[in-house]
Every structure is written in structure tokens, then in C-alpha cells.
Length: 265
Image 1: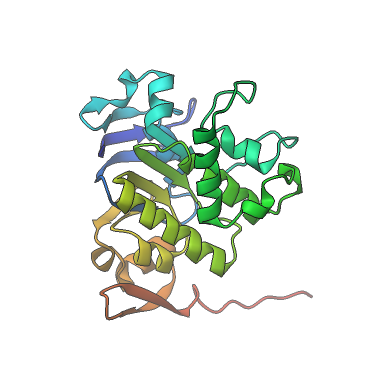
Image 2 (image 1 turned 90 degrees about the vertical axis):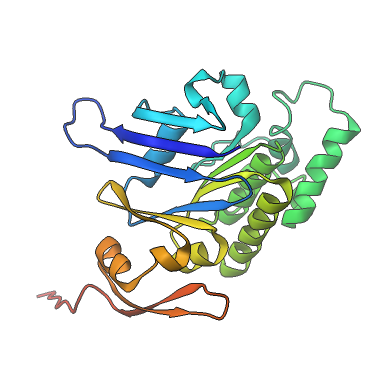
């Protein structure tokens, strides 16, 4: 189920400033499309506009159907959405939080098939030992992985992930992105996610959409989007880009925005 975003524009009420300006791109089935750009570029606002959380001008299609024509239940069935916030009830155990990805209520009797699906996702993410731990007792990184587990266990057609690797150390970041990549390919889902680490985005994405000044600066394969010029203009830093044997551009920082002199007199 492809995502087609057509001419999305958005301004907050009582504001003349456009937060999104004529955004158009496609995210294809069995591919990872990553939104990149500096803080404030409009990435999270775009995600919320795509999902209809924010009422924007323009059109979003899931497959060949306008997203506004889906009922809430249909949209929840087709789309798995991982937000930046971990808003689960703190009194629940990790297993219960993930089970809510399959069930609307824990009061409903759960069959063995549903339980097995939850354990399978927990096993893939290496968090079986957290099953009985209260959610409030988890670290920020652990909460992020549990949130991803809850999103994946729904078995959606579309994954929309807002910073899925936030608060993760490098090992867990690599493992989580590898799992997302494998899941996307094997289950033929469409994955749209926001990533801040450009090297990780280049390594794990089929397509990048670079946002700058609330519009799209460029989009396409990582090797076409990640250039010294694009990084300098979108992020304000000077970099050297090395393309590895797999054709993946890797960024090396040369310097920051320039030398600054600080005085504490």
C-alpha cells in the first residue's frame, strides 16, 4: 500500500507562517522512505498532516484511496504509528503494553495465537526479559523499543515511525533499524520514518526526503540526496562525503558553523 503525498501545505491557526509548503512525494511498498532535515524543518508536522491529526491542505492517498475516506478503525488497522511520546499507562507491564497493539482492551479474553505473536515480536527485539516489568520502570531507550514492538505487532500495511531510534545506544540503534528493514522487506509494508542520524538514514533507507525551510529540498536515493551542498544548505555545516563500496554516502564533519569566541567576563 503506497503513500502518495500531493501538495500538502499547513499553517497553524492565527498564524500567517506556512509550516509546510506544497509537499509532494511518494513512499512505496516494500521500501523505507526517511524524512530528514534540521530541527524545525517540519518533519513531525508533516507526519501528523499525513495521518490527518493536523488538518492540512492537499491530498494524501493510501493505495488509491484518500486517507480522509478511512474510518478511524480502518486507519488504525492499516497504519502502525509510533509517536515521539511514550504515552502508555505506567501501571501496565511491558507484555500488556505490547498486547494492546493487538487488542483494544486487556479485558478481552486473549487466545494463544495472539500471545504467540506478542512473544515473537519481543523475541525479535530481544526484550523477552522485560515482559513482567512495569512500563514506568523502563529507561527511555527501553520504552522506545517497547513502543516499536507495539506498533509492529499490529501487522499493519504501513509503518509511520517518528524517530524510532531516539534514546537508543549505537548497538540498539543498529539492531532496531535492521529489524525495521527486514520487516519492511519480508512483510511488504510501506515504511515512512523520521531519522536524525544522516549516516543511519543513508544506510537503511531506500529513499530520502530532505526538508529545508518547511519544503522539500530534494528527494530520491541516498546517494543523490546526501551531497556536501545539500547538507551545508539544510544543516549549516561543512562535511566531507565518502561513498562506500555499497554506494552508500557516509558523512564526515569537517567543522561546525565556524569558530566562535565565548567570553565569560
